[in-house]
View 1 (cartoon, rainbow, N blue to C red):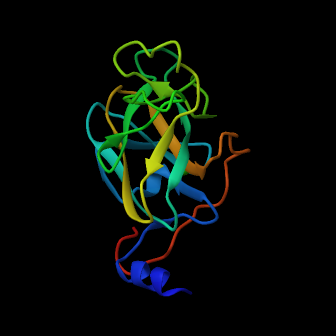
View 2 (cartoon, helix red, strand yellow):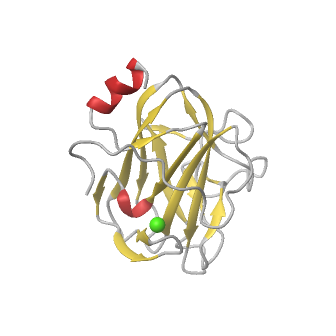
Length: 186
Ligand SMILES: [Ca+2]
């Protein structure tokens, strides 16, 4: 174990990036307000109940473009199919490397892996619609991914951040990349 990892572990890390992958169950968010627990495909999921957020503290060993994959679903209509997403308070970046979507959009009432933008604004621009979105991690260290209320009824089951990873995870995705810390995990 390098000094870097020992240092970060001492801070009480919850999730870690390993080999360019961060894998997190939504129901094990570092912090949450609102978002009720519902049945998922990979254990439980958390569903937007009209307020609140889920946040995830992550320790990265390297910066770069981390594509944001959500195992998520809606209620089968466009009123329930998105959420806000930020990393350290900054929006994700779309496929044109400049648009900053509001967040992530789901693709139907069954849990499915998606990596596609919602917004910016009410109608996602055609040039980025349906194309991959990523979080730009500026440097190694601790960063916070936050998912916030936008549409009541949207549910997220699992989140995978993949360095330069434009291919959807298979099945329920890779095992969680968790660094068991002192105090933070429930
Ligand atoms: Ca889950």
